[in-house]
Image 1 (cartoon, rainbow, N blue to C red):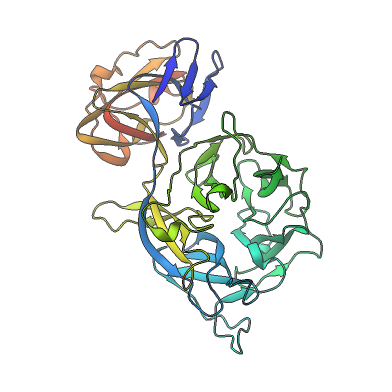
Image 2 (cartoon, rainbow, N blue to C red):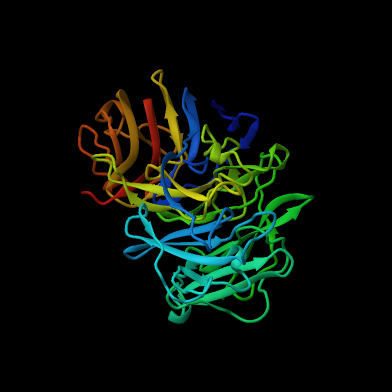
Length: 467
């Protein structure tokens, strides 16, 4: 349960204490989506309102790595959507008292993110035939992690880039014109200050116009994460450690950080907590950042191993890098978010890749039970003419919204008592008051929002141009 002591603005979440800034100028959020994953916009919570962490739902196994060139240590998957197709890259390897064949980089693709195929690419030979999906077999294959470069200045022959490397030598840069045929960029590693035996990744940060890297190193003997930036993907800044205020030291094996596609100002991560004292078990966590370095890390696992014995093995239950929209198989549910995990690592006849799903923006919500609660935002300015909520209630639950001035006084015509009942489950629900929902006259004015919730969750909001 989360409580705020007002007006001291001290927020306590379990044993973690945050001091919320007071007296700062109003934020300008324009028409950008605002997720309630942290206290960036939250000023006060009262009643039974709290921030609630949500967990993704287990879905089907989408791929079993049972081909002769694959095996029981296939790992470090990368998944992203590229136009009309979904791409998956992964390490193919097998271990039986040692590796039974070299590590390869393999490629799979899908039309929907659910049903995956291994195309016969004919690029590299295994056991006398090139009838396979292998795309790379040299240095860097252990943890090859690609991305599609969205830098507007990127040359087409380097539209796809990747990191790959080893623990001691460092991270090498790779490039490709098509995501299939790759070459190493230069003969020397581009990052050397780290312990890189993990999934190390990079991407183009369009908000800050720079490449960002996140990779593994040892911090006082604990596996942890460093970050660096680059203007060209080849020359990188001095790496710095990530910070997690209030979170304990623990092994973070992978990081899985990326800008959230619906709000690229927000970084989200799905790091894997590694528990060496418990048979090297792994479970996924959730964390977010507004600057790319300081992260709010939840301590509760979002994907526990659960009753599935295949997830209780050494290094099973990783979350892989990538979050993609897919179509729900439930009637009327529309789109959802898919992420992917592993099972049966080191055991059986090949690793399994399983899919999990979230609702859109559904990582954390402002939640209140039937007894009710309220949440008030910090002051902000906006552009747009209507307020849209990502909201879910029970059949008897509700949300009402009141618009306040900067000092916290209700604005006439936009009181909670004027707000139409909001109930249901929608990704974008327009808020209306008795006199309508046109907020154009309030543009540029510093306002606050007051949400009154009853058996309800609010995940995000934004302002649109519906009027």
